Image (tube, rainbow, N blue to C red; front, side, top):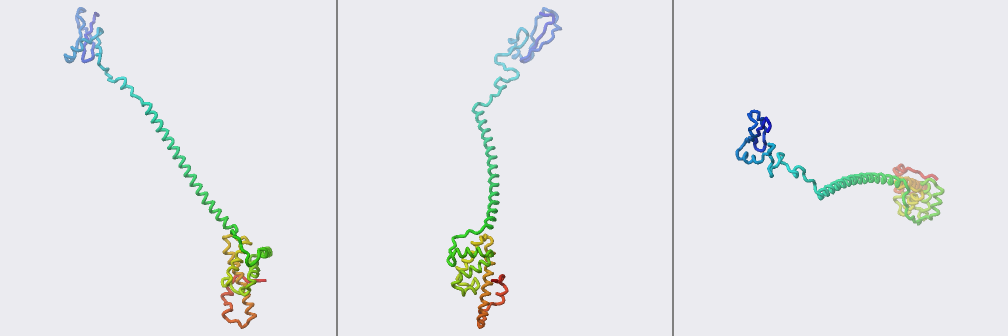
Length: 255
């Protein structure tokens, strides 16, 4: 035993060393002082080691109170990892698909705008091109004679006047009538189609062209009537041209 013996006390599961300086003799044996309930002290006295420490019981859990399984949580299983990987892959594919669909929509919108512009351009070009002519039936003049008139007359009005003479040679009495009053409507239509065909008149200009030709032919018809009236002084007033008819014609025929 050492000179200053230590008196040890135990409370619950802990032993507290107490300086035994007041112990008078070396013969006083080392004592163990327990503090706490008697039953607990009696139970723990058998667990005191020779060094004065309180040994743990066979089933006593450390003060931290945590087991190895509690300290290290179990990680995800291989099946869960596979599911997570698949979900991430699906999300990436969805994001990529969304971006692709957006690009497709933008391309479609751009192509639609281009098609609209192309349609407008083609419409403008088509209006400037000569109208597509069907097979013209040369019933009132041969194709050669019409082509010869076209070669001779660069002006479509002069071409129409000479073609009218050729077309109405079998019914010359109608040359003194306005075009809208003539019975031979097919002959008038033939003259109009020949003008369109041989002068390559664009569709957008066909109406204007025919109005000019029609005015020139009506002016010629008025002159024919006037010459006829001069040769026939007893003609009735009903057949004489009115002043409004004379003033409204835009063209006069000059040989």
